[in-house]
Length: 523
Image 1 (tube, rainbow, N blue to C red):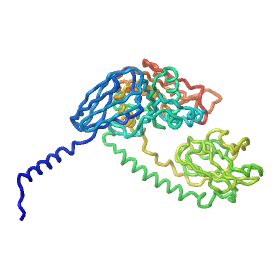
Image 2 (cartoon, rainbow, N blue to C red; image 1 turned 60 degrees about the vertical axis):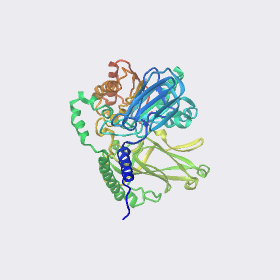
Image 3 (cartoon, helix red, strand yellow; image 1 turned 180 degrees about the vertical axis):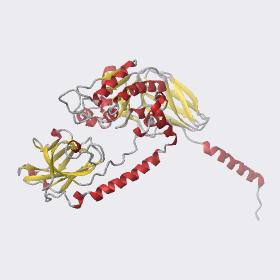
Image 4 (tube, helix red, strand yellow; image 1 turned 120 degrees about the vertical axis):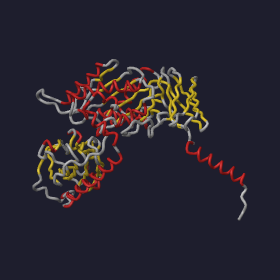
């Protein structure tokens, strides 16, 4: 047997044991994702920077003339406070520690505003009126964007999962909130200082998910749902719903006789098909409560010259999904996007001089369904000519009524999911104020909204702890068709409820009663 050098063996053992004890706590320094190159920090307020590092790590920070020191706590979290700075830049933020250094460059000090709400705040500039042209000239290096990722959380969380500050360019502006962009541009042109805009949006969400658990304490009816958060496994909920949706989708495809009988063919007889004036929801006509598939057909006529070139087919908005054929050729399909005006290119090789047939298979998963939007959105066109398509269409039901497709797990299924996942991680950040565009999803309970709208202001101000910062509410637009006589309206009642925010100091309302479209909730 070989001999063992015991002193040498002991040294190796002690070194190994030391590494075993040290390695689990070793790590690198990091900041919250809200900090990056190109960021804007709030002027004239203490600057809070936070992140993670191994427990006990000393962190030294320097920003322009300001210095700070912090230590990571037992959980590995650190937070430093730098002195306030006036508007200016560009600067570097230097973060030094024994486990690594971080440098962030091109930092501006100016006004930081949060742009929060549902789809009207979320809607990108490129989809706004004149938005494409506006984006094309959006070279504003002192306007910066940050988009908070969509995250739901049953518990309070400190860190964002992703994100970075972007300089305003034509490429970045087109995908940022249109409402936020116009607001930020107005600020910049009037203040002439750097502007930082933080997009915290999620379409189709109700106000309860934006309020903290503590903010709901005044509402006894919310307590059962809040209690359920303790045992909520979001991933498990999503998986179960996905399984149910896949089963529903399979039944829709299997039971659709339009697929079985090839109704997309122009040779299919339309004898026995009904007629419907389009655009409108089929619930408002002959198919109340119908979920599943319905097929639509109509013809349009082209001259020999018109049929010799590619054309654009616009079928307006479809709730929820469509597959669209021209003369039996599939020209486009869009899934689960009821707000989108469908426009498809039709090659000349698919066209005929004379009569041409359009077939649309519409799949509706719940609530309203059909070919919607404005009449002017339905047409075939090229260059200076167009053929309108609004009017009588033939239709035939493809499936039996399948009932509502199981809904996705959504932030509004439980209170506080957005607050925990998207607001909470920003609470240390100093900012100038909030612009808020939400309420469409609460129109079913408009009286409830007035108390919650006031509560969200109190709740956010309390959590941020920086005083009564400005909170500007965007009023709901003039959505829904005009009626001949005054009557009850949940939309109008919610719009009235929004004015209750003016009971709080430093609040304002952007009135949009003179804006909007009857059949389009988005601007």
